Amino acid sequence: MRDEFKLRILLFFFGAIFLFVWGRLFYWQVLLSGNLSAEAEYQHFSVLNLPANRGEIDFSDKTPIVANKNASLLYADLRKVPSGKDNVALAIAPILAAEIPIVATNSAVITPEEMAIIRDDNEKQTIRTEN
Image (cartoon, rainbow, N blue to C red):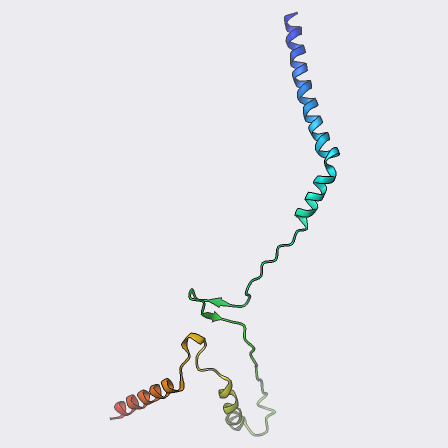
């Protein structure tokens, strides 16, 4: 009789656990299915915009190392140029030189006065080395 009582308590305990788990599953999957489906839909299809500056690499002081800028390329087939490569180079050099910047960043812009001082210093050094 004692073993039969232990067996009934054990069956009751496992039966109660089974009914509790089954009841919770029924509650979540049947009664709350509409709410859970809406939450899942929202989680799967939410959009998060992260605006980013693309194409720029900056130093720690925010001066650009690399930035997006328009660039033009010029190609010529020298076999098809009638005037020869030296004449073509002399003709397009002033045009290209006017478009090439002296410095790459805004933080290191050289004014015309500073450029004149640099040229004067270079000429003085050239004269000194010739003597």
